Figure 1: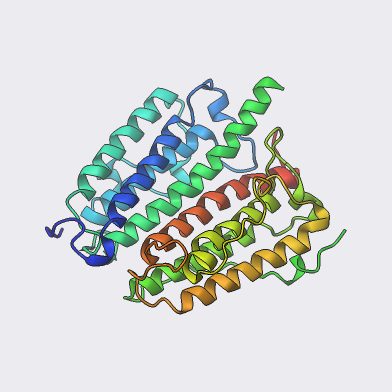
Figure 2: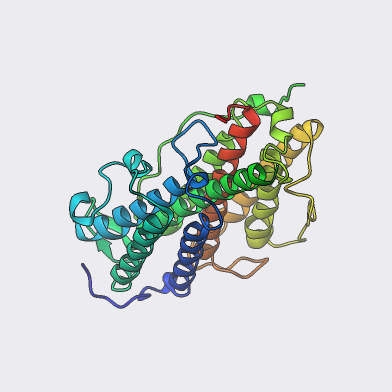
Length: 164
Length: 169
């Protein structure tokens, strides 16, 4: 892990803050996407895939662990406490609940923030091959944005099903 | 009803871009990748399905997302970097507007806007280069557009399932 100060390179000035802001907006949106629904509703499959609202939240906690922990520190999925594959990260256990998945997600995001706060966008890490920090940010931003888009529509389907 | 433009689109899978060592080129490559992923959401859909508000009561179709992204291409890149006259193509009627009859027109307009965006980007080689229209930096704007495409691709992904009628429930 490098120790240079955040935002050290000219092109990253201002960009770092905006990236952190964007990520936090998506984290909040995904965290809150399950609010207002029952445990049954957040487990409904409304399209022919594994995608459920609660499964999405579980998956984005996994995404945080892979890119903002494993890719930086090289820890194994087992050490981090995340699923071994992306596919499995969507799978809900009978013991999972809205509260438990939200709690895991919140703690995962806190870890991500504290890990990334030590790193500048131009730093290079080697936990999952050689990658720059800005490439990790872009990866997580793309994934969170896409899953927030999935959650948007799932929520609308659940709301429509509830009232209609 | 058929669409001549839909038939010309490339729906093949593409690989994620490899790092080139140049941040500006990497971000531009990711933008191209996200644009392609977005357009792939149109595959298998008829013009009628494209324009369908598939998740009522939300007034949103995959075509509406294409219209929205045309406006984003314009505001952030074609005008944003190229400068000139700023256009507001659809007003508030981007997401909800369009019909099976406007699919070709909307797709042609979107693709032409992407060409204007790329022409504007071609003269900005530095990641800290400022847009002639909005004055924002290239690095920031490319990240913003990649983010926009990812979000709306996620929405399009779910709407296309609904439009195709392959809902489980």
